[in-house]
Length: 442
Image (tube, rainbow, N blue to C red; front, side):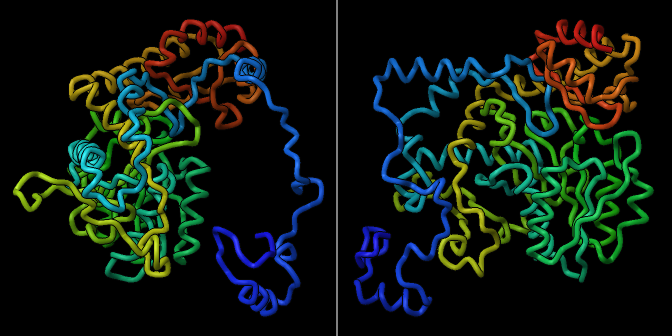
């Protein structure tokens, strides 16, 4: 604001502005901000105008400073080859310029695409309701916890999560739970999977939600999901299951093991590896239809009897009455959901299953090769794995990871002597180089 009494964004008269400043007890708008002089705008950006060619050359020089690493990183962020058709279709102007469908009747094409995305999630999870606008897996988990707090019929304030929960996801969940007066507690793991006996001792009347993952953050296939679901049901707690659409193509259907809510990273389809940017998967039972955060696209008929699509539910309070909102998620993830839908459609059911099976086979084959090396044991956990697995090394894991990075390969160090390796169709062709680098550095 300039202090002149009005702007295009805050059209107040001079008297109104003066009255507000007086009520606050300051002389001008600048007094409302504490901006260090070193970073305050001085009227010049210091960016000299240049031609397109000069700017491209400068950007090339900057990008050339990036490390040329082949990533074997996972732990919730997965890269798969994205067919070119995804870019070609998703970059059409009618998709790029369409934001939140506040007037859905004029956005039929986009709404249909989102309806197809939701339908794909319904098929993969077995749950009848799927959302098309979650930020990422971490916020979807937070939304599941607050949903559980709203719908659970008895008292309780504890959300139980795996001991191996990824740190960043746990921090987001804790932020959500702090606002809802919920507590997050972890339960033990047994050889990479849930210690069901220990969980049984922990679940009780104070439990609002039990969260498990399949595959786990270490890539292990969870083997006793139905038992975990039964424990949650017996305590009248919600059972939330974390997964992703590629893994769901070959793993147990969540609805069949008692899952009430499924969350996860749907950006495994349609998005390149971004190590942060994502698309939250959120599906649930019919019972929670009116408690679902975000937006739901539905299909019906228009006045002429033709099939039509609409935003069946969008928690409008998110935009205008936030104190009554079921969620504060407002940003629209429709475009990345569209990309995931196009990718899934391009693969088709058989192609999606083939991709998932490759994730199982490639992980097993790479683990076997690393296990043959002196000074390494892989996989650490005696389980089936999807994409990734843990490796135990005799030497300090951080040092091994640093040496591998010097050889051009990035892996996770997850413990004093534990590494984690993730293989997908994008880096499967570089596994020979990774194994050779492992052999050299260990």
